[in-house]
Length: 173
Image (cartoon, rainbow, N blue to C red; front, side):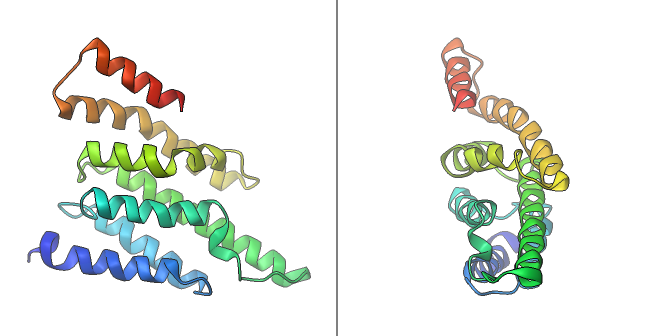
């Protein structure tokens, strides 16, 4: 079975479609995130830089609270349920990012560039959430970032002082 060229692009595209639906159900989005996490373990992961960046954009939307924008703007129990759903989706999204960063099936340079250009500030903000499970997962994800930067530098084939300075600047962002 040729996952990398035949099935992965179709699966990623279908998951992204579910994640982009504004009034989509939480269970559907959670299942799409779980499928993407599982796909990270397959050879080739979720694809190249374009796919990784696209998935990270959807994760960014979830982490910034945009996923539940139409999920219950009323008060009372409906609002609390929407809030719990948002927290659960944030947790699922953070798990996906952690698996993607740690699995070793993606090009570290693609992950690094996508992470730095799209998602890193939102990951840092997630460590300040109210729910302890989201905070803990955000910290786990952030603990993978230095390892990723080292892998990306090694795959570039250099240990030079200049590259080290660039990595330090990226960490300061």
